[in-house]
Image: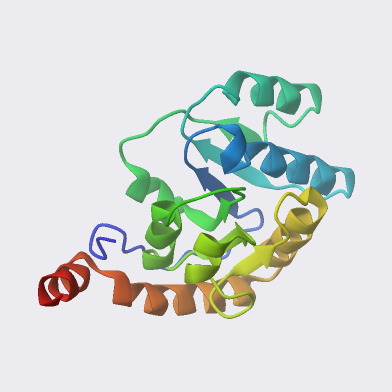
Length: 186
């Protein structure tokens, strides 16, 4: 990850922190889980702000689902963006609800920005995020567990800041310079 590009200042306290999902809007990335979690949180009376960055075949169906649930003001689809780093500066939480994944670059970028990551419990995510150490992990495919972890992150600013700082520190071992040097050494 480029630590200069994805360096973000600490956020000022927010009542409704922005939650970002970054990536293709396809089944294996799990965007439908985040929509379901948003609906569950809304049913519990919790208002959240969610932004999806990316595009894909599920976008239209999920946008209709969001609209029919009356959440269009709170869950928005922004399409593909070129300036992910500027969005990262606005976000407090980055969600990666994938069912399958390689090494998730968006998680590394969020770590570099010092943001709180909430990720599914799959091996590539666990390679980067340890639950309650430098992020939060939820049971893969479990929208209720995702909603619970998001509720924790949204309601506890100190937790978000602590996890984000630990994530930033952990990301430093994955800089382009360091990875290139280690590859050259091999």
